[in-house]
Image (cartoon, rainbow, N blue to C red; front, side, top):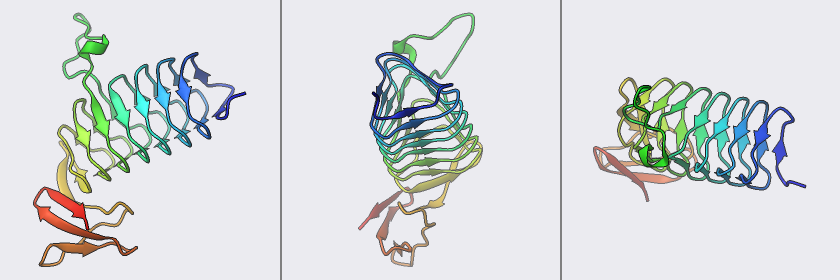
Length: 192
């Protein structure tokens, strides 16, 4: 007996590696070469392709497709109907649909992606990056970076806890739970 939950309307293909405590809800499809960590939650109509790797405690909301080339580290949040691409220049007449064609998209620990955002393949969202709803991300997002717009642009910084960071004149900020951050440059923030 599996130590994870699969709704009766969902399909988990033979060979899929699903961690303990994970919940896979209505109309999901997990392909046989997918790897999913412990304690994840998959909302309605989520698709997980072969060779996708998902860390522990990730939350994937309704209508998200994770195509080959996508890697989620632990504690990643994917909002409803957000989109990952996996080919930069798709063409129907000249298909690019083998593993060699897919670009890697890396979403690092604690990153959050808002509803209806698009992550163009080949980028990295660094630790605790925050992508606003509807943004189109075409380049890497720094750790704790907050991006919005089309194309997405850096608009501020967010703590791991989820507080917008306000830096003092010396370049320091403290979030609501007392964690300190330092602004190293215009494009880099780190925890102290």
